[in-house]
Image (tube, helix red, strand yellow):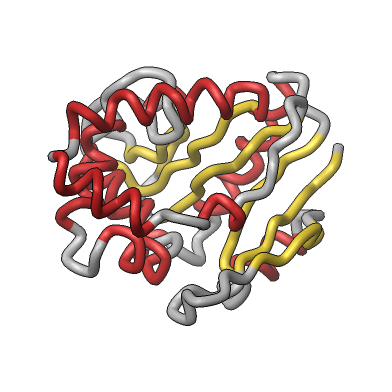
Length: 204
């Protein structure tokens, strides 16, 4: 395995970041953005270089090799108290990233999906995305990122870590092994292509 280190993310490698995020819940993203990933890639690569939004490099750390040549994983998260401001910022920024037709399409697709992500308390750390390149899976890279996530949460004086994951993901058992519990389960009527999603919580 290539020796990896966790470093603060910068604004580069947006396409790789989009690929890593997409693999965390490919069914959901295909449903919301379309299976061709064109709008999804524009969405992520447009938001990643910007500051202070739910897809920003400013809220992420990445796994890089010793030469810093590529990204092999990422963890992106933030304090719950930042969520509302980040969502508002993202909405404004998307006006310059997506076309009016794409915005209308996305608005229709995401209708009701906010119920899949319950409220995040102000003093909780929201683990929005954690993902490892397939070439490094099963070699401890995910553990590195998750343990670093707990340190980031502690540094922000958070009392818990929250995350959302689809019910059938193998990650559910991994999160349980790290002390998470399922606090809520969400299912959207009329969207049979979307598996139920679980809100998982780990208190400190």
